[in-house]
Image (cartoon, rainbow, N blue to C red):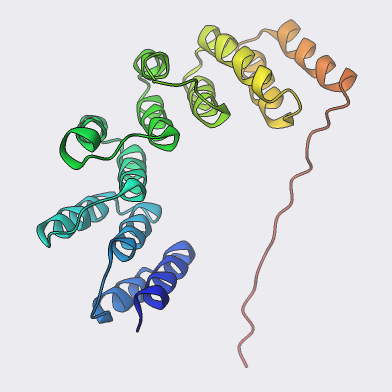
Length: 217
């Protein structure tokens, strides 16, 4: 079992939710690189086992392996899904200080998502303001999604303007902002956005579902 093959299988099984197979492959590997540990940490985080994900990171560090940029993305994702706000912030601030890893846009997006899920919208907005570079649509989109969940219409309006300037043809951004206005009873603002979509020729993408069945012979 090579590192490349084993890591690929771990990622595959993790994405499919087959955690028993994921653990089996991981334990059966003689040589494990940082990418292997990243795949395992991500698999736990993606299947509702955030605490095991974080424990895996501690084991990785105990074995003397140095985390990289990907490691911190999956760690912050685990903290976000588990709503471990304080721990997530400590991990984020330790990146450069303790591990010499410079936070990138993806890491800031994870922190915004972490704070947004916890309802700490002002703190998330502050993180965006203090970023060393202009936030992209992914970071702003994480905050906009949090505004929808927690009903912060005013912040959503400001964030929505910025994100629409970056992605003027992205139908999803218009729909989310329009739904925020509608849920707050601001029907005029919601209708205005819908009209902008129509006038600009922007159409909502039709959703599709796929059902896969297993045929046993």
